[in-house]
Length: 120
Image 1 (cartoon, rainbow, N blue to C red):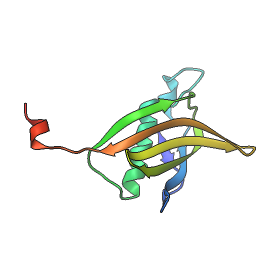
Image 2: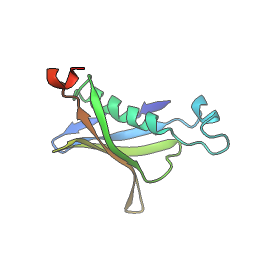
Image 3: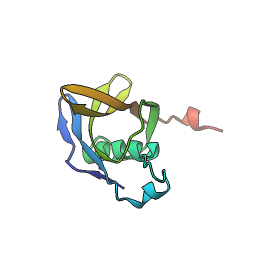
Image 4: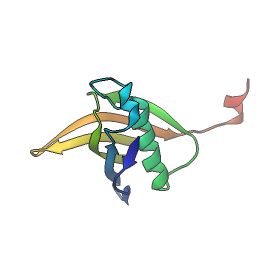
C-alpha cells in the first residue's frame, strides 16, 4: 500500500510532502508481474488522504482532469497540493540533478450539491 512518509506540511502556498509506495506490497504481484506499476486509483487515494490529514476535507470530493504523463513505479515521490480557482491542484513529482519531472497532475474539488441538481 501507500505510506505518507512525512506528514503533509500545510503552508500558505498549499501542502507538500512525500508519498512512499512500498515496493514489497502484494498489490504489485498482479499490477504488473515483473514490472510493478502503482495503480492510478492508489495515487489519487494518496492525494485524498493528504487532503484529509491536512484538515481540508473528509467528505465528498470530485476528481477532475488527472493526467498521468509517466508510469509511476513503487518508491518515493514528492507531492504538492495547491489551492486554485478550480479546486486543489495536485502534483506528483521527482527532483534530481536540479530537474523536476512531473508524473501526475490533477484537480480535486469539493462536491457541491443542490436540491435541484439531485432531483430525479
